[in-house]
Image (cartoon, rainbow, N blue to C red; front, side):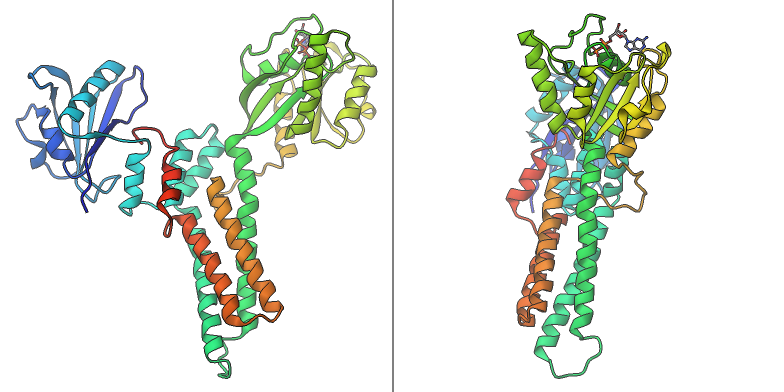
Length: 454
Ligand code: GDP
């Protein structure tokens, strides 16, 4: 199969120590040879795989574009599985573009987003679940998110899926054998055994699907609304959590009139924070719009941090808020602890109350722990298999649906070969998850999310 040669800058654009231009395909080494001159006089085509040469990239008129190191990979021992050259030059937008332009002039085509990873997939270097995990590693916003993607990258999702697949294939084979020889008394061919195997597959698939939600919380964060009446310290709390001055802090009530959003990492969790307008009865039209939006946010947020000024007794606006967040996933943040306490736990019966001073940071650790608990976050162990994309979950859900259907059909007395067909469909869905049997449309959809150069 011929692999046309493509090239792209694989490092982020901007100034940096180095930029790497990756060239991959059948003519990668010849193309690099036509513009890269090693100081040793060696041709790159004479180098074995994993060997590097120091030299210069030259323009068509012989002018030096930059000096750098060319690293040669020989197929199939490269990321893409094809001949590859990675040229490391000085980091900088103009110089990197200049070198890329020269490589394109020498015959490479510009790589599309995710093209290198797609080639790695097509050349059997990694399966689809692993390819998706690479994207997860690149875009991880917290240690926990990184851990999940790295586990998937090392093959946890693929292994678990294949394990379930094998059990299902075994069951389907048993169903087929049993329906062919129903009168033979073969101990391994007892329908009860297949059903218990199916039910264990069903449990494992359910665990995978449930784990996805936790993985999502870890990798994408959870929407968190900060609510409370004006001046209780919502913006100060947001600034404390985000270590910045995103929200305007003043002592004039009603300063935050709309929603200010930012993403922060609290403990191991990413919170998509929204600092809302203070919730209170107001005649000001603009402010009342903000209040309306704040109340809306309490309805859609995954968790709510309801802030109160603990140094003042509760008033009607506070009680209004307590009423509003009843039965919601909310934490009471009793702020301004540095000014003393004028509320009691009794005021907030049924809620978890955390006392903090957003101004000096007291209670921040306790708040982080309470948020983790509220989210139901559990530290992920290296043995946990977490599906990392909506596509993977969809495949697992479809597989589980077929397994459920197979068991229900068996119990309803449907013929065994018909039950076997459902098990086969479950296997198909899992093969799609790992990419072993996948349409071009599905794999294109996966790779188009990748950046250029990956
Ligand atoms: P918001 O309207 O609820 O967003 O309240 P702000 O964050 O704008 O704070 C209102 C006022 O309370 C400001 O003057 C803050 O400096 C002050 N403030 C906020 N948190 C604390 C705190 O923990 N202790 C003290 N003493 N003052 C605070």
